[in-house]
Length: 92
Image (cartoon, rainbow, N blue to C red; front, side, top):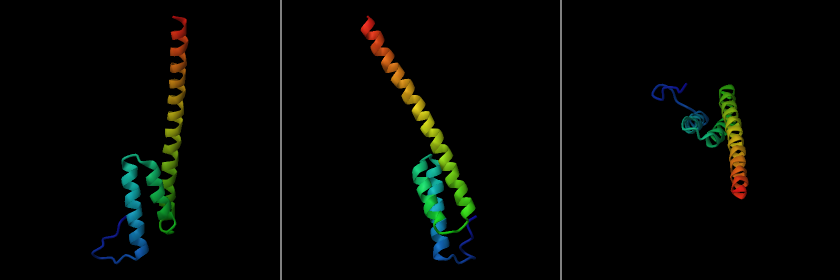
């Protein structure tokens, strides 16, 4: 939760943390997971709300693993289709 800046004075570390988390969240929303994870890692280094930040990093890691799995499946399907094309082409 972001404190109300009109009633609370933030330390430089808290301000930086909020900025890093906001950037990470912005990238996460548009599914740019690697930049989001990098911002979350930088926020984690500030040692504020560590559990929340670790959870965000875990989310990024899970989605990146799924993304890699989908990419590998698509690459395998593409390879089979290309191979089938050349096999069928040589038989004609």
